[in-house]
Length: 295
Length: 140
Image 1 (cartoon, chains in turn orange, yellow):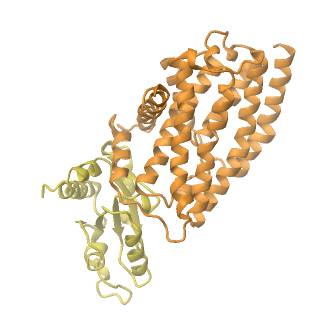
Image 2 (image 1 turned 90 degrees about the horizontal axis):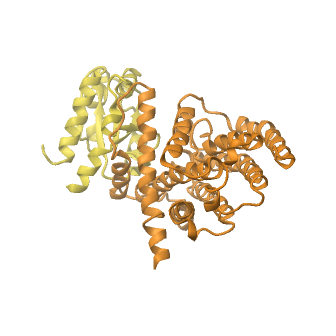
Image 3 (image 1 turned 90 degrees about the vertical axis):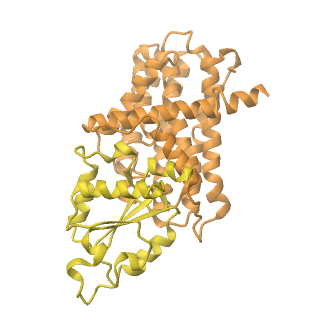
């Protein structure tokens, strides 16, 4: 019963969704201020979601119905589970377990996978183009994400329990940890699908990519899982590298994401792959070597 | 009715440019610029009709685009507000006697608001959107 409560209400779905909506509002507001506009009201993300749930739901004629309908739900549920585990380590440290970092790292791959499935199942050329780009994107950034985690693992001497990062010295303070933190910031941008790494959904180019055929409640589930990811991923990075997830540290990471989003052009998918594999991978390997040497 | 009130707080707009001369398109973009900032009211331009709550139809409906308009309208998730944008879409304007014109937009799909002008000014566009919102809320 308490497990269900934790998953559905407090650090889980509902709380993460609320936090993610506020984060999403901050994102839109800061974007508006950067562009010298006023920006939307505080409840705008909530209105958007509520609006999507009263709209008609259309499934394309040639789409694979089950996959098309299941993908947003899988994405929402697994993003919520990742947020629950991260939230438990912040609010109920005694409930954390050895290895939850690995579980979270795996759970955070499921929403992009669901997006690939949904896009590929929707029988639309632009959606399959977006799905294929998303696949390449996952291949690019997951490598760097795991290398940054390996640096953390070496620096903390085999530490895989999220709640224990708070009591130790922050990993980001050491030299190799700082390199890993910089890599993780770029990976975070890609994991959240924000500019410059939004080639897979590129509104102006392939008009939403995998999302193009989604309408009404199913699109709403995708939007909600995006909100949860926006709450969960910066919190995770803050726990691992900055030693705990306070509101201040979380907002700083969020604003870094937003400002990078607003001051960069979109990279082509080949450029993303080249950046991650040929420029960031050597930097990651250097960080691993430095970490094993104790720097 | 209450449902539609939520809809009016977040209107995502899809732009169907049917053989328009681009003046209307540029005026639509003007509404999204910092001077008018339509995002204050939750209005956002989207790229796919499946995400849209309102459709702006600009330009004359030619023989080539008429089937496309019908198909796009049938694809859209309802409730959807259709706005005939500019003189061409509202009443065929200067193309009234052209051999390529078909019918005005409202004879093909139901239209909720007309924004006349060639092109309409951004103020006229905002006025049209306000009229759509009052209609959706059932206050008109």
